[in-house]
Image (cartoon, helix red, strand yellow):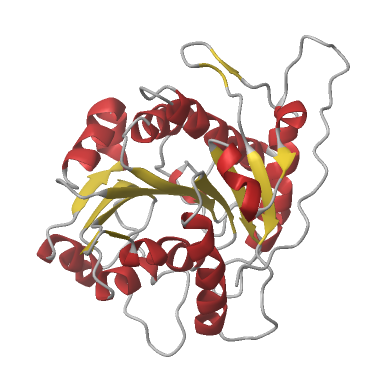
Length: 315
């Protein structure tokens, strides 16, 4: 049974009546009423599995705060006009990441069953498994729906689980559960081992480096989506460390990353795919940030996803 904390009160920061902000738009909601919205926010404030630096448990609150003061208008897609907030997933009191993943998945499974597209606010990357794995059980009639993931990330996060899962293991876990396709966009040289690179290649998963994004970001995301083939569902994950280390508010910032402009454009293109079944931003760690610039980037990544979602035919 899904259990949430109460969603926060959303308040705009501008007194100008023309300044339409997400603080005006977002409404707290429940699962029973979530289908009234195009998308719903779900916070997952957990960072107990992070390999490097903690702080991502504070990501959901900070991203909401930054989004509240962000204007809702996109020049091409127009204003975002529908977004609910279910609050945060209530986490069990345990040191076991596997237990936390199971509890979160019990809740996110119910979220996926409502009509709105879930937008998960992390939380470390271990929550990706809990957010996306219920989609592996989705069925239409007697057939199980296939699933592909586009992961915007500096790292491959396909470590073998040894003991408890970590923030570096979600895609190995999804693979072991039957993931049909995976594309990693923005991966960096010298940030992974040969063994994990070989795992990705040996399973015919797609890898688009940060350098290739710099050459042509639209081609990069098109490659990622095309590599998913004819899967029924597409889940999009953004680990905010895909950005360059100039955005330090993540668990593992490193140099050589992509720009915010590249990320925003690619996220919009991905959101325009009519197979989208969910979206997340993970690893935003406000205590490690400088002048909130990583938090602001994460909030605007959510806004750009929503604009892309809305721009779809019938969106």
